[in-house]
Length: 393
Image 1 (cartoon, helix red, strand yellow):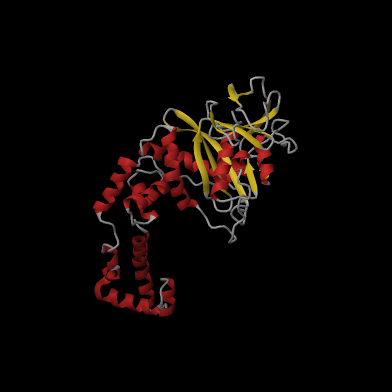
Image 2 (cartoon, rainbow, N blue to C red; image 1 turned 45 degrees about the vertical axis):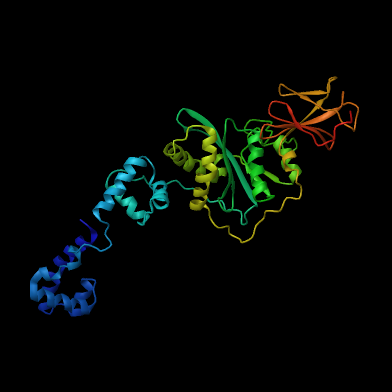
């Protein structure tokens, strides 16, 4: 029984008693109206209707009328069929976003939720009584950037690492992509996409993964005086690194991955995507923009902490850098590849010279001697170009 019908029956039962007491002058109209929780004018109307038609006269006729806003039966049937055929297992909020965006739904979230729950297509969630302390967001976008990775079976039978780089102030995702394994190069790629899209940011917040920090003792504090390759790059850019010491400290990233682990596999399955390249295209073109549209919030303060990049050599900072000694054949050995240094007008040869090898996130390489780039190499170690003129033959 609905609340409205229950209240109507209670009013009928109480009215007879109040009316009898009023009719023998044991109650005034004001007192009788107070007992029925109505005004005196309404009580007088009840008296007229009761004396004319009895208890039936007190029935609210609107109770038996069909609301003009009630959804037609065929619309409810279409909603239930849509969910069962295409979105079975999706949570209500995820389904509602797709219902509005792709199927031009006009009903409210509560209406959709009630219809699916009444049809027992979606179970009612249990109340979560855990208490957590809120950490205030950074006031400006660009003040703090989060980066984290999540290993999950994003498509059936395949576990990939998802690398997400997001803004603390707004929840906006600036970079998201799949890789086989999280590491320094994937972190460089995420930061590079943010820098090229938005500019230089102030601080970088992450867990204590070994590619971010050196940690002398397991579970202990990080060694800020012994930076990793990633820490070296952040120092060159002037970006402050902040280490998180518990999963709770990375609550926003943890909650994001909980949402993505629920939604993204369903979206990939719906789009019939099974390989990483297609999944990355889907992330960039569809999933990430849709997520930002739904979950992005407005920063507490207007303006931006992003700063335009002054150094255009960003790719030569966000890469692995290691020194090597050139062999007698003017070759450098690096990661089981032989990098041949071409002839140059600046030196007769580079035998026994100390050079610096750069390994980029896209799998390419370069060899530097001091500030000068000697050659670029593809992922197989073959020369693809030089920045110096070749010595005259």
